[in-house]
Image: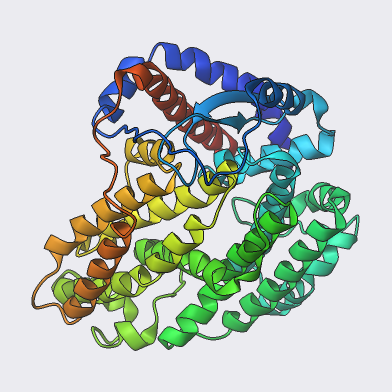
Length: 473
């Protein structure tokens, strides 16, 4: 999309939310039909063991200062209620023009992450927004197949230095997200306004990622070890950087940022899920990310898996890669169990449960080779609403691995490994006691749940419609 059209078509976030609110009031029946089977509330929180809570008045006062709407919601470590959490929409009147533009770019380039980034608390919200946009710009350079290697490789190597060059921009990209490169000076300006500790983390991750991306431009992913290495460069480093930002903000304990193995595993799980799901799209665009070590057992060329006559070995290959990705779920559960801040928990948990749901949809599904298998919008909104505490997350994970288990073909070469990892995840999901039902909930909270469902549905619909306007000629 040409840069000049950005401000012409965008609305201030406050106006968008007001529009969503009005639309939601007329669409509650739709939302109820989508979510009535899956909304859940758990038992009341047991006293003790939790950090002290701000009073309602103090939270409301803080919310007014930061432009927040304060709602009751779950806590990360206990099933219900009675903590307060603020769903954040940045105050437009308290933002600089450049920061407002950055949040506009965030909403244009990420339908999935924009809501959860804007739900983060305090200064962490801006740091993660800029972190995302910097890496989106870097990723746009890597993805652009029209940029020759002589130009692309030096850009990837040096990208971290451009954050301190006020006028650097790149105007030759043909990618749909090219505005983050064309107006990079706005992003780098806001980067330099962040606290130094945030700047150092972002620069370090950007440098390592750029070097790693350049390494894989001229070679294919051969072994499973190289698959892990590639996923580390493009996603594991994101997980590590985010965890370090969480700890630097003091919203999370130091161990969250220090345990790079778990943070890396969080990123690998999301990236592998995307690579598995996007087989056909990547093939059409001339990219190959499935590891040769696996697919070569099922065909002479990776592209052969899309041929109808090869559907049986293709699905077997798919199942082996899904099994490999599921190996990260135990790390995901351990990582999430360490989080204490509600906004950080939501930010981390929502993409992970969506990835589990996506893998369950992809497993043993030949449609992966005919199109993109995605979870439904209503299903996605339900997961966003539910994934707010560990008991709910464990219940969600348990449900989806249970969906995989009966689909495991006995003749599948990786069936034994799939059964083992599914059983392991099932046991971990049950390790802290019985699961909360995902299908029963108290009538007291029904109206709030329906309203949240309607708002979430209309939010995604509005953002999607906005993106379509922005990307249209």
